[in-house]
Each structure stands twice: as C-alpha cells, then as structure tokens.
Length: 277
Image 1: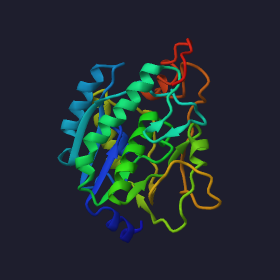
Image 2: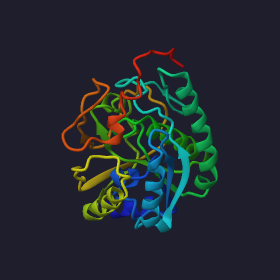
Image 3: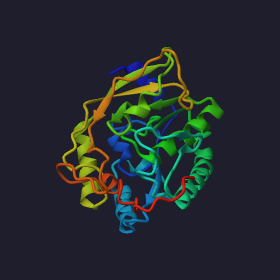
Image 4: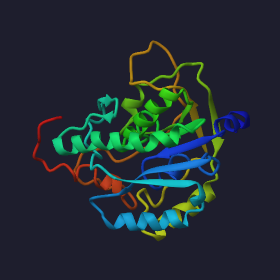
C-alpha cells in the first residue's frame, strides 16, 4: 500500500458511485476511509421493489454515517451503447435503439450534475467510476463524465479505479494517461466487503454474482480525464480484469447466480430497431 498517496487522496474526499453496491464492488479499498459516499441511483423502473430493498440496506449499512443517496431513477440505458466500441459523449455515452431512453439518459445527466454540484464544490479529492465504466455500464459512464466535468471546473483531483472486463476493454484501450499522473495501490479488506455484500443479499438488493471474490488490492490513478483521443504515448493501470459472458443473446446465463445487470443486457432490446439518437 502506498500510504503517502492514500493519505493525500483521502483529504476532504468524496466517493461518487452510480448504484448501491458499487461502493464495495469497485471501491472496497477506499470506501471505508473517504469522508463522504454519494450514491446516485436508487429506483429501478423494471424492479420497483428494489427501491425499498436498497433503502433498507442503506439504513443498516456499516458506512451509513457517511452515505448520501441522491435517489435518482435508473434510465434503462444498460446495454444500449454500441459495445464493444461505444461513442463517448460529454454526458456519458451515446445511447442507441430508443429515442425515449436516449432522451431520459441525457436529461438524467443534467439532473445529476445539478445534484452533485454543491457536494463536489466542497470536495478536495474525488473518487469515481473510470472512463470505461468498469465492466461496461452506461450509467457508470454517465457518472464518470458528470463528475469529471465538475472536478475539472474546480481543478479538483479525481481518482479512478482499475477494473475492466471483456465487455469494456476496447473502450479502455482508447485511454492512456499522462505518465506524470499520480497513482497508488490500496489493499481491500475483503472480509468487510463480504459482510456488506451479505447485508445486500439479506435485503434482496445484491446485483452482482453471488460467488464473486474480491481482489486483494485495487489501484487508483489520478489525473484530469478527457474524452478519448489518440495520444502517442501514456500509461494505463495494472488492471483488475473480470470476464463476463459474451454479449450474444438477449438472455445471458453465466455460471452461478446471474446478475440483475447482466440479465437485462439484451432483455431491454425488443428486436424492433428504432432510429438512433
């Protein structure tokens, strides 16, 4: 663990994640140590009972004293970008196949920006989703872009994690960072993360694989991010790689309990192609 790097990055720190359980899946190393955790989404229109389940978890959460939930409604945009090569935008990623969902997604980014502005204006350091959305989630990318733009306005350092999957790796390869950017590795208290995951499962609010095993270490990279360009040189993080089922069918069935997110990947695609937005 780079103690000096962690100590500096945790000063006045705010962690911003998209959904409940993202705080332990992608930021298990820093979530117990940041000053504030902001969770953006609470409601899932496809599963209304999830809102109540998530609220119960957040009330009982061991880190409840530092969690603030913005209680936004999810956008149904998962699986709607052109993976494996989605088109990044200044509000997240281009959504295809449904004008209504594309409009909802863009409008949600505006609401998110308004809600986060007074919070992040007071932050000295920010942790948030990386530029490819970890395993490849459109709402992770929205949060990333909104947070990054607010941080750049205030010249606030932003720290990204090192998770990637086979779904998102082509987008990740489009990003390299300035070799001078700071980075540090942090150990994960895996037993603590598993305990919190059990709380999510107890309330039927867990959205990831039941047999998931935490990485023992995460690496955080600092630096102002921009939309991907074609830099001649740079560096990426040592990656924590997650292999997911290929995005071939409307119903994805990996070994073990399927995640709600993966289960919805093409279930939202009706087969009736609508005009791109």
